[in-house]
Image (cartoon, rainbow, N blue to C red):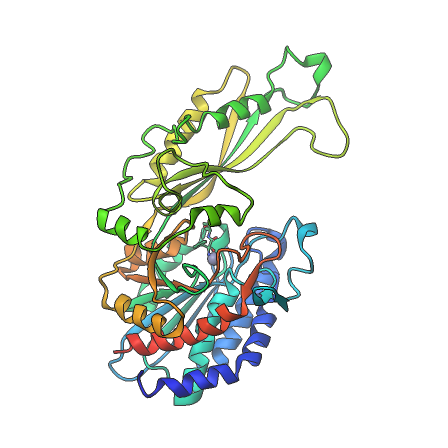
Length: 461
Ligand code: BES
Ligand code: ZN
């Protein structure tokens, strides 16, 4: 262990209660990016971060975008030391259905659970708790040594959960200000509660919303049923046709750019001892429901999918109403891997929907963003240094893993800034991110802070 590290670890342990108080202050801000009603809260979360970074000596500022602001900060390190850019996102997912929360999502608490203490509240894990692990590690380094072991820039985004619409123009316009030797991203998980992970691949994402219109108004389903086209029936048929009976997506050209997992990666994944029954059992399931012939791990880390995220139409209120609706809506997302081209798939999907429309039924499409899949350069020397640093903190050695989720910026850092990313995060599979009662294990927070303190030392040279 480098001699500079032990006093930093002592310092951050001693400061844990204050660190929690800071995290709670950030979590009390309802920064839901996808809903315009929370615009001022997103702004307030950005302001809070600027102030907190400034309090440890970071030159930080809020930068406006057409959407929610970015927070950018810089702090120097020793002369000649490497330069890293740290990324996290301060926005959170909506909280509905609110009635499934045991308490106010924006009134965080520490709860005792059979599995240990947890931080409960929206954003605890995704991503406020995670981004603060890095900030707290920096705070402890600076408190003990007066400076960080390397030069650090910060980028906090406020639109990650809503498709990052401002990100590409912002990165393009601010390329020189943001480019570093390596990006560090804290928005992913552990492999399991004892096993830290470096995520080496992320799936991409394509979001589409479709609205089908049949008759020009809602109709009495007795007076018109049988005579008038029902857009919900059309929608159901279109959705049912998106997969074949082997679970493969039917959109023409969908699998272009999808490659098989290389044998050495497959062997490494096999060695992780992933327990698919436990993974499914934890959410009340017993049978994998994806593509035939693919393991669960392969399905979530290395295969593309199409999911229906929401469907709406007709009467869904209390009681019953015999209506033949005018409109039907669906929100549909595709997770992408390899070099699948989101725009080509969007076009092919739209053509497939249009081709399936009967007379008197029309469709409108709404684009909810797209980002290709990303693979990290695991041969970058920082990966091995970080792997060892993580292994020193956690009960088990660090694993190189994939992730089913998407973090669009990882690919853009490479494509726009020419910068590699290293993804390290401390979330657990049962954190209920995007769901009611989100939590972050207190051990994730504390060990996460300690992990970053170690990783900073390890990659500083
Ligand atoms: N932190 C998640 C991504 C994630 C989830 C990584 C699980 C690893 C495991 C991130 O905040 C997220 O949810 N992203 C969205 C992106 C989308 C809205 C563009 C996602 O994956 O759905
Ligand atoms: Zn996230």
